[in-house]
Length: 336
Image (cartoon, rainbow, N blue to C red; front, side):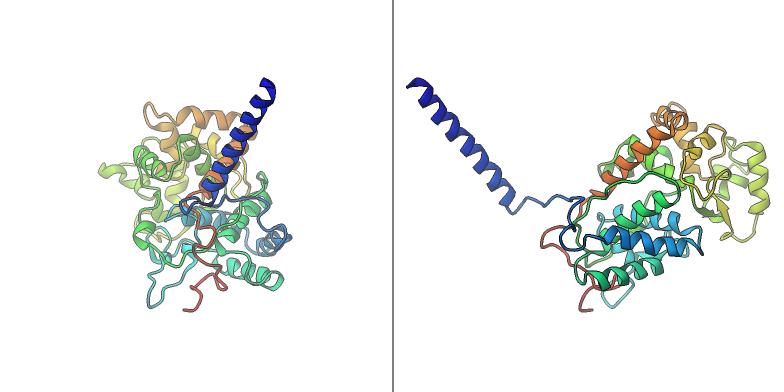
């Protein structure tokens, strides 16, 4: 008799717990979670479509994989991963493409357009531009020799842009403490900062983003003392004082088109191209130094942490459920 009463009490308690969970999930303040299986029943081959378009683009543009990965970063750090970086200017929108970090620098928009067209042909009105950026980043990293992962999906597209936010993206001129502050503001820590900076293991940077290190570092009239001397000479030849600030330089001088851990060994050898790169290791007492050394000694450790950090970044303030929209054209808000 006593065990029967106890069983009924336990059953009632379990029911109340389950009911509370259901109510919490249904409450207006809750937000749907992203899922790797989000499009399984509505657009099951979306990943393959995205990868195919990027492979085609990569055959004629070896830089495209790095450029598409950077677009995802520049999207997520401005009001979350909502595809806002893709919007063109209109009567109601000032495009983020004109922000200093993006202007004449961010690229790959035409490839995103091609991906969107291919996806719309297969699954019209289903896949958001924000999710296309997430899928494109994953495919790009893997196609360049990096890890693969199941991107979490289910984002919807924003209907506004934020050029002020875009002008405050993490910068190649930022000190380590400023970078840490900007990452912390979106819920990312030191490991995320170092791992995501490791994406500078492929791609290019224009002279204007680091020429101050070559000639007048911090107003001293001298080069950055942390730069390897032979590397400094090479960079000065590529970026002469008063020369073309848009000249491209490999972010990783050893394997510029491959996603690997050489970025971190470059830092150990004082061959980080951007100030924001080298400061991860060279700043006195930097909490990031041990992470750099760990990733330099083990590429698999870097890859594992990079995947987790990309997922963490992709979780920054996504629009889900009935928020936002699924843009039919990534460059403009529906109906505009």
